Amino acid sequence: MPHTPELAPAPEVLALTLWQPWASAIAYGTKRIENRTWPTEHRGLVLIHAGRTTDPNAHDAPMARPFLRRPFPRGAIVAVARLEDCHTDDGWCTLWSARSRYHWRLTDVTPLARPLSWPGARGLWTPPPGLLASPLLADALEAARD
Image (cartoon, rainbow, N blue to C red; front, side, top):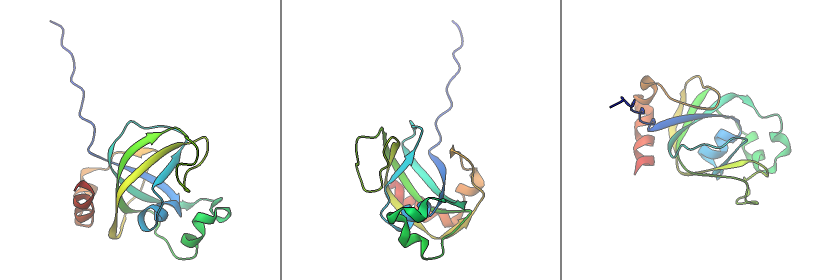
């Protein structure tokens, strides 16, 4: 009988780097849709990482203005969320939805007590064990799992 390699289990927690002010709008505001040009099959916990870059178009987005008026973290994990769904543009499912994008629906968003400085990566990335072991993440991960 031929040997069939076993698939490695999918990571329980992934991370997503977002430009500011969008990471803060998720962590500290009401943004529960992340707009992407690509879909994902991942469902489960996602660390929300604030990248070092500010979206140059944010100044033209009314929903971003409150977050642009105050300092926001850069290069840090700011929240844990549950990625519950990913669907194609179905119209404007929320005020945060963008046309012609995939809408990643986030729930159970739990901001960290304080941002956790960490370098990000492009796309949906696997956090290393050292990051997941951080005491700053423990409460937020537990809250998002409940």
